[in-house]
Amino acid sequence: MRHGKYRFIASFLVVPLVLYVVFVVSPYAQAFYISMTDWRGFSGQQNFIGFDNYVELATDGRFWRAMGHNGLLLVVVPLVTIAFALFLAAVTTVAGRPGAVGRGGVRGSRLYQVVFFFPQVVPVVIAGVLFGFFFNPDAGLLNGALRVVGLDGLTRSWLGDTTFALPSVMAVLIWGAVGFYYVLFSSAMKSVPPDVFEAAVLDGAGRMRTFWSITLPMIWDSVQVSYIYLGIMVLDGFTLLQVMLPDGGPDGSTQVVSQYLYRSAFTDGRFGYASAIGVTLCLVTLLLAVAVLRLTRRQQTEY
Image (cartoon, rainbow, N blue to C red; front, top):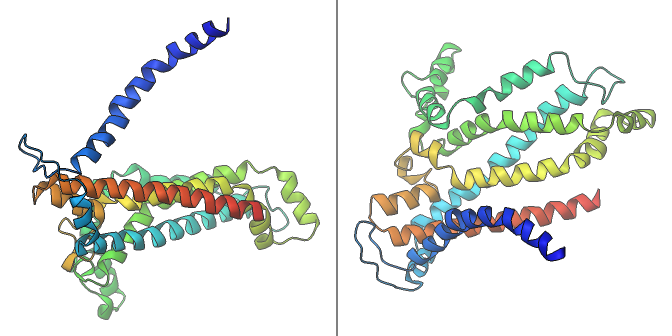
């Protein structure tokens, strides 16, 4: 009976495992092998060169500058997105009338969820094109609005300025992500038992104390997963940046690792080197996920 049970379970698992190995594990293994060759991408010749690509990568200034841009995105975008989404979720979900903490948000909270979730419906490519027009220095809506209110001195070429190009892209990334996590946090807050909030009110806890001591710890798992997903998103960030600033921005001020990978492969014809960049980016993403899980788990035990 025991062997029959194992055979029965294996019969269901063998097909998914084979598909996973073929379509997930195998491409990663191939990418790692290609990263140790000098393959040019359009020939059948692949000379094995060992870790030469990784040695070159360690001293590549352009790669480290792109990694720095990814690091800046990794710090700013997830933190601002999560903070803004938590604020909106708390205000519209558990910050109702005085004395009713946890019994419902402000009136029309469902409408707010639909409105803030709308950017998720817009494809990233279309959003990139639209915001390219939005930041246009001559006919863009942003500079036009500044001129209308008499702030002509603040107008500038937002995507053409090395100081403001990357922050402009950050603003678009936050705009596109905050709605999804607002809805996610709102759902998590609604799952918190109302009795917990009522007990806090009876003990004299205010809204801020209730949020920090009850709401946030009880939805911490959602916050943790959100940071990981946002981190993965900004470590890539290829689609939006390639649409808005395909050349890496003014003086390379917005080029991220995924763009440098694309340029190394399809412009410079160095697919082996590009694969080394991809493997490195994959390892960085895995390390980020492990670090966030360990750090947030430790913080959760402190609550």
